[in-house]
Length: 134
Image (cartoon, rainbow, N blue to C red; front, side, top):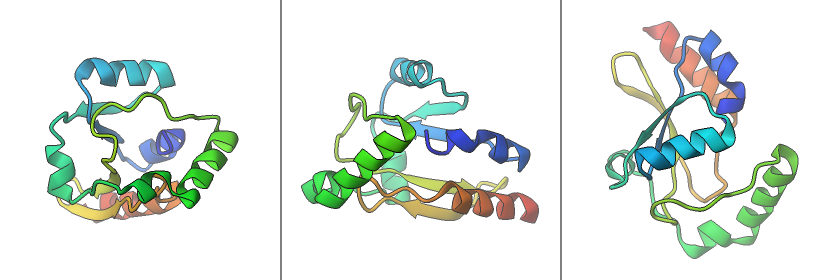
């Protein structure tokens, strides 16, 4: 959802946002509908892509530690978004990848805890660099 907020800037840069979730196609459609998302949402219930990129499963502290909870509360207050029902493995962390037009991963940020998301500006800069190099 964080990246979706800047979808116009990504589109202007020639970048397509694609999300990979752990649920089923029905879960993906419900998530898009519930949150008003306009992007491609793929599903990987067996988490093959998560393992392929090295995304880790979090410890209890990485899911519910004081710093993580505080970041979550701040995000909920400022962005008016709350965590819904978890679909898939509850400890699976994600990440953000920038994939160049040829399929090469040219930039990656894999989460170290449940609240570890890179700033959109950083992702957009990496995506712009990838499209300009193509």
